[in-house]
Amino acid sequence: MSDERIIDKRKLVKALIENTPIAYIIMDNLNRIHYVNDSFLKLRGLEWDKTVGELCYNISNGGKHCQYCSISQAMESGCKTMLQRKDILPNGTVRYIDDYAIPLYRDKRTGLTYLLEIMVNRSEEMQALEECNKDLESLVKSLVLILQAKDSYTALHSQNVQKYATKIALALNLSETEVFHISLAALLHDIGKIQIPLEIINKPEKLNDEEYKIIQSHPVKACDILDGLVDLDDICQMVRHHHERLDGKGYPDGLSEKMLDLGSRILAVADTYDAMTTDRSYRKALSRETAVSELKRVVGSQLDSDVVNAFTSIPEGELDEDEVTQAKHSLLVRELKEDSVNDVHKELVVELEEMQQNLDTDKMLSIIFENTPCGYVLVDDNNVVRFANDFALSLFGYKHEEFIDSHSELFFQNEEDLVRRDCIRMRRHVPSGECIFDLYQSKLSDNFRTYTMYVLLDRTQEVTMRLRVQRSYLRLVKILQDLLNHEWAGADMTSQENLNEIKAKAEALADKYGL
Image 1 (cartoon, helix red, strand yellow):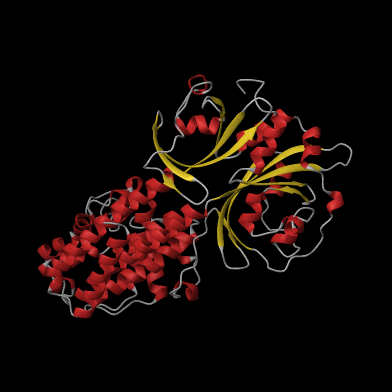
Image 2 (cartoon, rainbow, N blue to C red):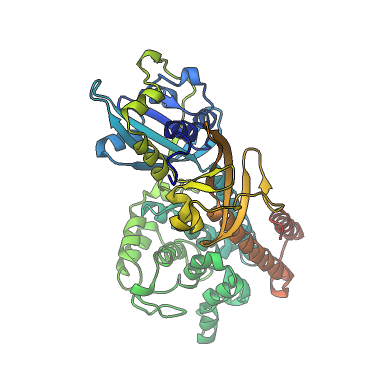
């Protein structure tokens, strides 16, 4: 603190954890809850009387220890731990949580160790991302519908490749984002064939050299169609390179092993397998056994061994299932039980004030400020900054000496700020660049003066993500419109109803995202 005479530190600790959008819980190593703030009760839809004094797993997991527990991990390691969870509440409401656990102190008298659990609600940005991804996939499927109107085999092939590629990505334990992008790339990998004459695509005889060159141009044509999807550049690269080979003899760029990303290698395996196991105008489908044998034969020259091994490890019954399991990623899904086990013992609860006597107040403040992923700024009644934690300084790009004890109008509300139910969303230009954050505030006072405590949740990444997605939608909608209006696409449309449906979908999404 810049001035030792400012508000009493113990009062500050209490105000911090009681007047904040962050959920704070204090419990012991036996999982008995000793303190929760209002934000935790609101987050979980619980009542104080039925929570404080209870065992945490009684209100979360029907009386059984949770399989994954940040508190247990912090106890075992003696250090801060963090888990990312998707909690499904008994009423079906979903909460995305960043869950931190930090050891506080050990009570020599009782032998109990007390820990601070910090829960940050990330539901808004995660649900926004999920919705954006669903809409993005819907647009991509509209592109494939156009392809289906031209050539039903190619469209069905794209759907099969999506299924196989997604399951390979899951078998390789890739992240949710990687799996999603590979899935979209698989759907789009043959979109360039919209611009290839149908008589060449479905020619029953062997293609001549000129026709083969035209067919080989479809990855490049696909990238031309998708040009401008800057924020989905990895998808475009996968689409362009799905016919490359490890030995450099593929097309269109002749890339070799070290230059090929994993997504392209996955698409190559999925594409090759489906092409071999599907009837074509010039040959019958191969059996799974024969196709797998062929995949293994070209490992190292054409296909990646790890990807082929992952594909062949998928049971045949599971491989043929249309439904794809959710991605294995860092989020742990936990379904909270409605019926709890009652074991509330208020007499065992240590009050917050008593804990502050056992734990140095400066250490408590340090634990809160250093481990909570949000900014704390304390401003006096003259708008002079008296304190800012490292997170706030980093968020704004200020040095300690230039922000502390300075007069600041950073948090003065203006017309562009968005007033929400319990906070104000602000966009400010600061030394670190453009910063977007939700501002929560509360008043603190002592015998000398009144202070305002600002709590800042960084929303820059979330808002920037939405803007990037909007740009991608704008480009995809334009691609759809171009394809629908282009003579070689429109001429192949067999269903006006199908055409109208795709146009309506593009217009609805354009309206939704203000394009």
